[in-house]
Image 1 (cartoon, rainbow, N blue to C red):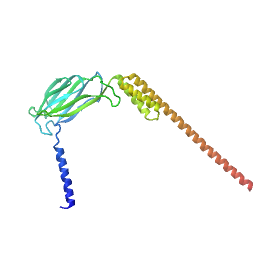
Image 2 (image 1 turned 60 degrees about the horizontal axis):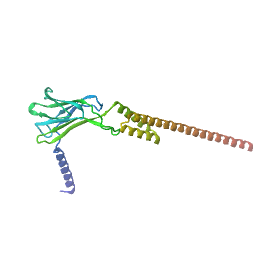
Image 3 (image 1 turned 90 degrees about the horizontal axis):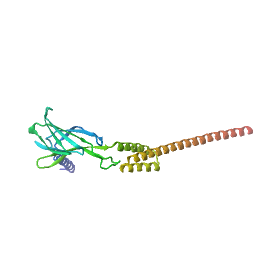
Image 4 (image 1 turned 45 degrees about the vertical axis):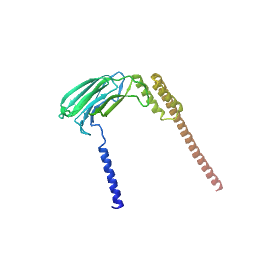
Length: 261
């Protein structure tokens, strides 16, 4: 075998080994179809989230397994709906609490698709952070196989807020956009203080400081514009002066030539 042929053979062998290694990596035997989960929610409000699970018995091939779920919502009710291949509902179960387990998924029951629904109240925010924004788990689902091995199916998170924290965040967002347009240490300092106040749950102060930062940024922008207009004006006067001076010099040269003539 020539060196070139051996090189090609080696590359082909390595590619085959890679494909085989990927194909044999264990993973969850479930795919997530449609889901309806909020991306943000106000503290104290009630929300409902749903997720549909498909391809229940593939990768690896399974005939039965157990579904479990968990959430950070409070006053929680879970409902698990089971559907057959025709889309008809064949069973449903309800669970209470922030976590549940024991929902049996089995081919012998004719289950082809499962929909999980969770309803609960958005919890209090443990600690506030402007960046990154604080989040909570709306719904998380796991698959437990015979023998106890567990795989995460998927997890959905959402940001949460109070009316005051949302107003403060919006004010900081607006101020941040204004400060980015100018070079003002004063405005940047006020913006930083606003973020510190937000993180300390002093939302009214955060709003005041954010508005101050935005006003400082706007004043700086206006000053920059006035300076730019002034420079344009000075530049225009210089050009006019040069033109007038050039014209007068030309006239003087013309008159000198006339006298000589």
